[in-house]
Image 1 (cartoon, one colour):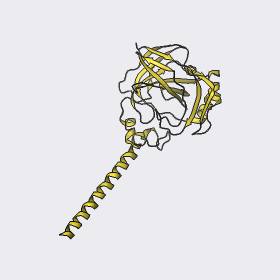
Image 2: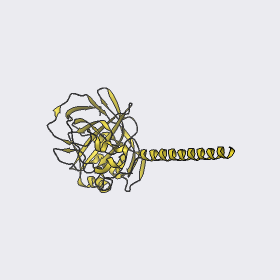
Image 3: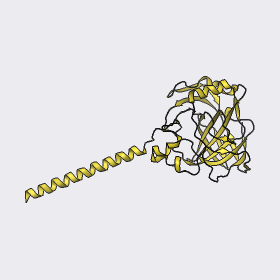
Image 4: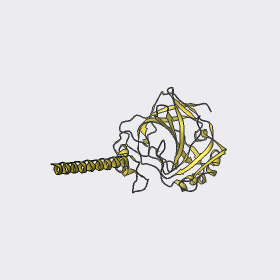
Length: 274
């Protein structure tokens, strides 16, 4: 009787241990699946396959409100109230290969401003968190790409997002960007902070303020939706040499345009305190 009891206990303990190990393995796999998978703009791990890299990136393939989009210039007139209030900030700049921050915008040059710059939409305030660059542009206008696009990413207190897209065309030398270009990181992973160097965030904004507005997504994994997008109708200009300073570091880091799926685009008028 004692021997039978001992054998039964051994079997029970072994079964329990095996179950614990199986659960631990499942927990480990679950944790692993939650970690952001590495993605890129190249053929391997590129935009066409983002959704297959991780369950977290599923919207990159199944989402119906994705960005960027092709914008037709005959959008209808909107009536929303937008206000931009951008400040000067010390320069904090980094060249990311793969980062996990507010927006997982690996493979870009990102500037992180100090607090104080905002946009307001129908009374809701969005705080500017960072701005970064894509070469060539991600949005197209009547099927046309621009040499570069600047994205200014904002977050409200309820964590909702709004992004202003600024198209950049080739033109005359733009002295507003001299200070920024002077301190561009040369290598991926390089981060620079220059408290003595001040830049004006409004340098990104053209004089005439109107924008195409639509509801879209982040243009990088996890491709989260319900993002307020404003793509300014008037581009800013940089010289060919200035544009090359960005494109030589970024290469091609633009996601292809996504289907509109019936979404409405409106043209909005913006106001500014600057």
